[in-house]
Amino acid sequence: MKTTSKRMVGRVVIVALAVLVQVVWLVFMIMVLGDRFPIVTTVIDILSIVAVLRLTSKNINPAYKLAWTTLILVVPIVGAVIYLLFGRSWMGKDMQHKLDESYHAAADYLSGDRKVTEHLRRESETAARQSCYISGMAGFPLYQGTKTKYYRVGEEMYRDLLTELKRAGHFIFMEYFIIAEGEMWDSILAVLEEKAQMGLDVRLIYDDFGCASRLPQQLQLQLQRKGIRCEVFNPLMPVASIILNNRDHRKITVIDGYVAFTGGVNLADEYINAIQRFGYWKDSAVMLRGEAVWSFTVMFLQMWSVLAHETVDFAKYRPHVWHEEPFETDGFVQPYGDTPLDHETVGESVYLNIINRAKRYIYIFTPYLVIDSEVTTALCLAAKSGIDVRIVVPGIPDKKLVFLVTQSHYGVLLEAGVRIYEYSRGFLHAKSFVCDDKIATVGSINLDYRSLYLHFECGVWMYHAQAVLQLKKDVLETFRESREITLENCRRSALTQVWQSVLRLFAPLM
Image: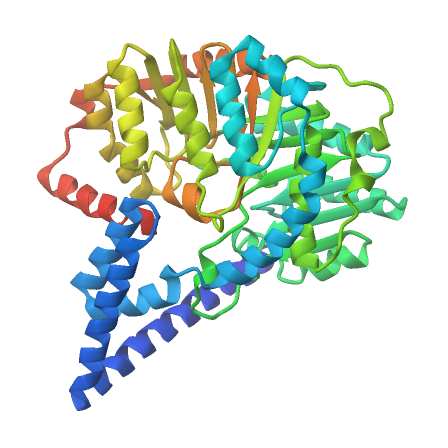
């Protein structure tokens, strides 16, 4: 086991060193040429200015622009090289073209039901407007005919996930950012193997960066030999390139077209507390049963068609193909996906819509609080308007530098009336919002720049569904297991404050 672990970690180290060597070599060559041929330095300076001007003209987050602009201007050669290698969406055009083709192929299957939309509008104009945004900008419709179940920790979801996988009779689709060898993955893999041998259509997508230090490099071939179709998102290569930025951060399981799981839970032992990392690991997830699963099926197949270069017959996987009876309903459910290639920040906008339209309270779980001015302003304005705004973050962080950035936001939020809690038992990895006993969202989307702007993500928006109050109950219990932060707790040394300011400046690049 130790040998396997060293081999897997070694792969990450080798790739990282290879990329570093390429960057250093390129910077060194430019500096050497600049000494011999001054015009080279002049050209780099001009390119740096052009890059900055192009950055400022782009319709992207201002903080992202500022971080890159600062890096380019403060260290012109190094900053310009890093920006040319990592700061532009070279991957975007090709990937977007393939995704556009896939989205176009699926568009007719995501038309939605106007009666459901009108029903929601009669119940709540505010909720209907939030739903309308998701339908219009993300392309995923609103559903009824769906039951929801919320999970307050990963081990509870794991038990139901295994049960539903064992019940699968036709197909299983799974898409995850992190998969790691251990109790959780081994037990799931055993079920997938068994189902594949029985002739079921079993498919898996995993992100290579997320799994690089946790799985053997040849996993894809091993799975395919077992009858499990497998595709790797953005294979990790020892080449300095923008493609290292975009990751598939989604967590999706679809079973037989009418059962789905999503949330923050990856397929690794820390997520079910079979091993301990950063204290007790608290996450959240939700299970859907019914019509709304169709959006997750389409989401998975869109990505599959791009990675596998296949044309997909979407109609074969509709919810009622293998479940002829009507589905139960407990409210309105709307899954949604987010892509970094369409310049529409769906994940952040869903969060902002909930914050801006709250009437009584908004409670938030997030592992990282690396927020831009738009989210900061929305949270502060809501609190100043008398809304009960509370945020729970980890008590034991997994990334200390990111946690320093998280803590750097405490002061302005607390002064505005936002209440902040640190989860005392350990690391909180949940990404969940609940509002006014009516609206909630659970998914894979963190409150940080990478998640909001660079990753492929997913979530599920719910109105008056069973999971909404289940989530609220969990949040209230979590408050009691957490330490509330005061302005007194936020006092830091002058050196720490300076360090936090620097980290905040470059937070969009972390």
